[in-house]
Length: 86
Image (cartoon, rainbow, N blue to C red):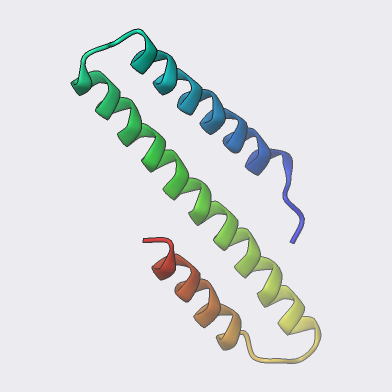
């Protein structure tokens, strides 16, 4: 799978969010604010995982169709990846 600019940009934003949380901790910000930011990081990670799995699934289904195969295996694999990410 090729990781396009959309995926890499999301990861760079995540990196910035994590750095922001570390800075908040160094500045001894209130724990409620730190947890709120960590929750935002978790949500962003989950969405990035979903995007990567969706793009991979799309690619696998197209390959399967070109080869005259069944896309069911690719779908099962994508579902398993999502389940494991939880």
